[in-house]
Length: 442
Image (cartoon, rainbow, N blue to C red; front, side):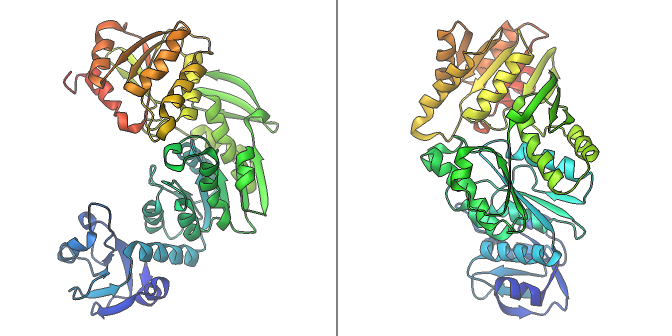
């Protein structure tokens, strides 16, 4: 992102305190570790840090200037603003509008990162496409995405997460998407928002700022329809319109709207995620062959159905995140595709007062599935899931730590067994893998 001093001041309404640089255009950085010549340092603030304390460090490393909320700051270029994050957001909105980049905003209770990656894989077949890195989906992540966007980008995909009401609205206000995508609304973050309706309201904040000439593409879900605030073209998709033709480990073939598609991943829920990418490709007038080719090139990112062969065991690590909906979908898919396997379940976070009930519901749901799998649980909440499975005859062992679970695997699980890991990121299930590898001490 490059802007002139005149554009910077127009975008963020800042006060130019000093400019002796002689430079015509500037780039931007929020991290003193990667400051380069020509950058203006934007010092962001958090609960435990204040970037303004590092202004001198940024200038010493070559920054041309800085934003600040304070007086008496020494730098070749100084721009004073009331709020540095707000200034960063306004700069990015200005730049995106200047570039006239087609924008796609995507949110949902689950599947949004996977859908974003599938969408990127599809759109890259036809367009120069840029996307949110990993799951950097808050307001700072939006700014990072725009700040790193190449000048010749045709389409930018913005993933939007939230911690509460108003979070997605803030990002959508600055992103102003031409297409908005809502993958679903479910029970993820119910501990923060209190009800499924509040979760749906938060996700549907995206719809307030979609270009009226654009489109909303969303799961055919009553709760989304109830709270959407978009009156333009709306496309609803459903896995009920899909015919599964073949499903095996690391492969799914399906028919949707009279066309055949293939994915190099398992699971009906991944097929559902892919429908948003298909519908977006169709909305962008892409030919079927390129949409299908893009989907076939998709591969999961780290800790999302990540397959590793370790000391004779086959680990499938899906522990990047977990909520009741994704837990039910991914574990039941694994049980179907990998008989005589081991499933390791960990606690799910951010479920609030209903956390015990929701963990038990996962157990009750999985207990209805045909099974030859054994289960290990780690954590007090996951043990509640395990207790429900035990009632229906499942073989379940419960542990209090990753170390105990890893030791049990090495001492009791046969070499050649496939082991599935599913938990919230906070459970750090990669520790189990590292212990089985012998990289971490047991």
